[in-house]
View 1: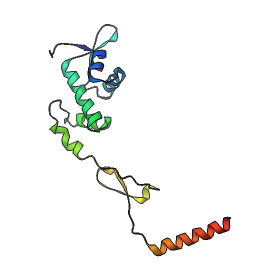
View 2: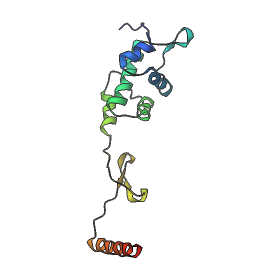
View 3: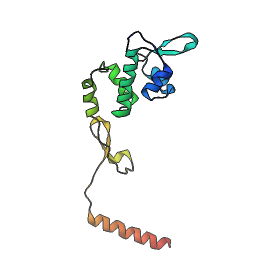
View 4: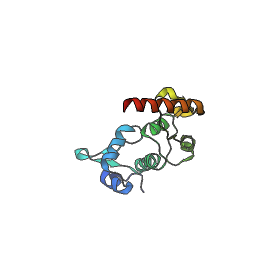
Length: 144
């Protein structure tokens, strides 16, 4: 694609499979790397390099599971490049696994790397469990 060729926002939207309103939102979120030229009547036109940056943002958000804030951090740290996927691989590789377990309060959690809360696991004391079950049974009997 010729570097001086301009593509309308509608054509970029169709090419990337992203709604035009999403592209306009990305302009606001990433103003330093996504800035189309505006023509008559405020119509947006993108150069080829801007489209490549949009493709990279799309890949990071939709395929690699990054957030808007994560992409902003890459841009701020100077790690956002269109051609080098290696520059973001270390960030994506650190994505923590999510522990699916009900937690009653933040006091019941340990904070581990990347500030992901993980519930504390205490060994089960069978004597306390039997006592608790007995007390609940007595409470049930009183309520009936």
